[in-house]
Structures are given as structure tokens and as C-alpha cells.
Image (tube, rainbow, N blue to C red; front, side, top):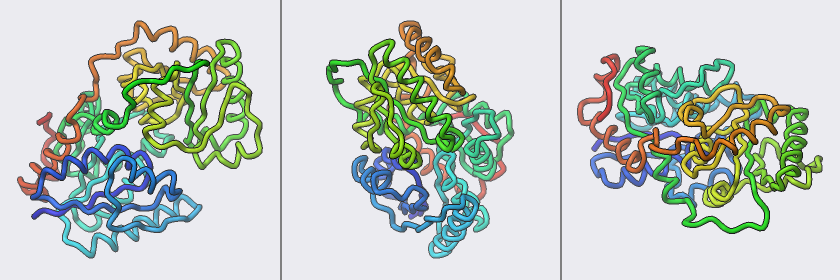
Length: 367
């Protein structure tokens, strides 16, 4: 039996990995051990969410409640090396672009264990973003790169990333299908949905106050109530701030509730990567509060617009809402249903071919 160490640490990794773990249940020839770095340690962000989406509880959880990001990262690597030393793993699987994913990849490389990167090849082109640095480093340390779109696969090929690249589609979609509400509630008042969590945005109180003001301005113009699901990073700010009457602040939501609010919204305003795709799948226009995005397919489809300054937010919302009728909502550029099984099958096939000898072979397209 082959054995994998699958490393998570954040809320997005929990949501996106649930379908992959269900798919692995059909492959008895592989044992998968889940390890949680503890990067997100709030119960509402992790433990309750794992129960909701059906992800098994981790075989090991690392305590990394260190405030300094560099020291927290070093703590994760050190602890993960200790975990990997205890078992003879055939591969280490990481997902996305988090510090947990990079720590897992680096720990595995130092232990000479092949790395599998799910969601490989994503690029925003903005090297000021920690996530962009993380995903590039992970890709070039990985023996197997699982791309969620044609664009992602093309990025890997242009960079001559080592290892084997496989186009699988996005396994997040299978979890989305399972969790989305069957019908949207009828509301007395139109609703918008807001999430913000990136340090360059939420660590700036001026930015947040401007956001509240602009959301309130649009809400008053169009009679829209914005529901802002507050990340723990911004909880202290809102504890001392009175939002607009058109902005309602709520605690972090279960995944199903997030999709319910999003699905009945006229617009989504976010800096999250995953929510951009979920808005696209629900055909909800999206404003991404960033200068760039890795999910360029949604922008090319006219379903998502980039906005880096709150002063431009009212116009950006009006533009993307007006463009809803002409946006290209189909076909899905991220592979549609069955992507989680394609990920699991690609990993099993790679293991059966002798994973350790594949690093350095040319990239190839698709299964």
C-alpha cells in the first residue's frame, strides 16, 4: 500500500480538499494521512468547518499560534519535518498557495519525499503578494503538478516547471456542488455579500473605513444591504467601528451559509480567491479588491472586475452588475464535476508509475 501525507492549515484548504478525500475512499491501494498545521486555529474557521464538509479529522495537528509570520512559518517547517520522519511516505500533497502548503513542500523536499501540488500553475503576476511567491516556489519544488485550468497548465509549461503536469479541473467545484443550496430565499431587500482577509487590505483601517463608506453609498443608491462576513483578522476593527446602515457585519459563516448568502446576492465584493470562483459558478457578478487575480478566466468572461481602490468601488459594482447579462457564465473553464476524482486518480496513477523517479521529466498535458 502506498502512503501519502496530505497537509492543510487553512479554511480554504479544508473546503477544497473535502471532495478529494471522498474520492480517495474509492482507492484502497492508497492510505492518506491528514496533517493540520494549525495556521488557522479559530474553531469556527477550522474544526466546525471540517465537520460540515466531511473532511476527516487530522491524524496530527501542529500548534503554531505564533504571531510573527516568519517564526510561525519556521515552526511549521520544523514540526512537519518531525512528522515526516515518523513514517515512510511515498508523497506529500499540498493544496494552493498558503504558508502551510509551502512549509509542507519545503519540508518534503528536504526529506527527499516527492511533492504533489493541487491547484498548480495559478498566476496573478503580482510578486508583491505572498501567495504568488508561495505558489511559484511550490510548483518548482513539485514532482506532480495538478492544474485546474488550461491557463494554469500553460503557465507551468512556459516556466518549464519540473515534474509532470496534469490537467484535472478544480476539485473545489465538487464540494461546491454538494454544499450549495437547492434554491435561493426570497428577500425583502436586495443583498450583496462581502469578505475581506488579505493583509494589504484589512490591516489598513483607512482602507476598511473607505470600504464601509463606499458600500454604504452604493447600498443607499440601489437599496442594497451588504452582508460582511468578518474574518478574525478584522474582528477587532469592527468591535470599535459603527458600520453603515447598509452594511451588516456577521461572524465567520459555515460554508453552506456562505453559499446561501452568495447565491441570493446581486453582487459579491471580496479579495478571496475561492469566492471569485464560487460567485462565477452561482452567476453572481464579482468585484475583486485587488490589482490582479490568479483567476483570470472570470475576468475574461466579464463576470469579475478588479478594483484596488475603495474610491472606485461604487463604479466597479455598477459596471459588473450591468454586465451580468452579457457575461460568459458557460462553459466552466475549471473542469466541471468530477474534478476531485480526476485529482485522486492522477495521484494514484503517478504513485503506481514510481513517483520518486518522475521529478525532472518534461511536463505533459492532461489525463
